[in-house]
Length: 469
Image (cartoon, rainbow, N blue to C red; front, side, top):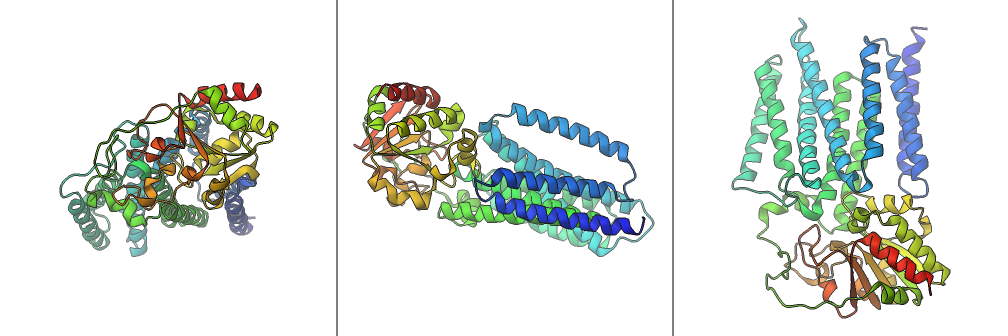
């Protein structure tokens, strides 16, 4: 039995890793995402059970207490946290992953320090990597959480010599790492490395803000996977190495996809705040010239008539819809329009909302049919043939300035070209700028009609009016 157990554990790890890969593959499509999530969860259960069968596990009572506490906290968070706060929760969970990796590295360091055996070089290297990635992930994720939760400003924060300070800290960390390899049991050097990694995490995220935050959340998710993988090397646990590598790779791929959707490099997203000379301010054009502009408004009754008598309507959801929890009302509006024979589609921008896939999750929660989801590249050619584009709480992702205003901070970012539709209705609370702080010239175009109010209230009014057509 004792000879078979290690083989059984490794085979279980292989099965779990296979389920992770299949699950990730199925997460790539809204139609199979739920099944993919279930398969990955089953894989994780197999991995946990197999790990607990390892004879190296010495204290099952403490593990059980940890599982119970963690499960309770998870259930409470899942029930209490609103969908609009999911980006913050993802950021916080990324940070917990990084914190766990750092704690594992610290525990392994103290164990080796208190033992009489010599510390292998490879053990010191894995501990250093785990501290570096885990520390940056922990504090970087906490800063991202604070920005998204509006506990601190969401704009980029810079100060003189900030980049020089970051470079100096990296150099000190590298020198300290070499010193720790030479004297692997020196606790002062080790704790200094921990402190530097935590500071680097803060310096890494504070210069990033506005519309770049979804990219940062995705990147930190990748870091949390790499931190878990590094912790796997510290513990010599194959499952943790594989799972962490899969999370890290998928996070990097998603980050690259989002950067491509914004037509920017990752370096530009991370470091643009240092070279920025100041973008367009709120209520001003990108060139800094404040001009008098007029907008055209529309009421719910007239708006409902435009939608109900249209042949085609494209709905563009944004963060405002998420805040108002209007996805179910939007689904009802779509159903009523289809009852009248209107062709209804939903256009999803890759960085809409504050988290990758934010809009897809909300619409799926409201049971909007998957075939009605259209990615940006697929829907943009359709707008010229669309009677009405209905923008619900979206801002930066429909700003035409991204196409032609070279002074705009969002210049070059591919957008949903709703201004090419025959008519555009924008549901919005006020004329305030979007998350990036850039005024939207779409609102002032002759073909655009503003319908002011909370997304859920306004959409409910539209539903009531459309039912009477």
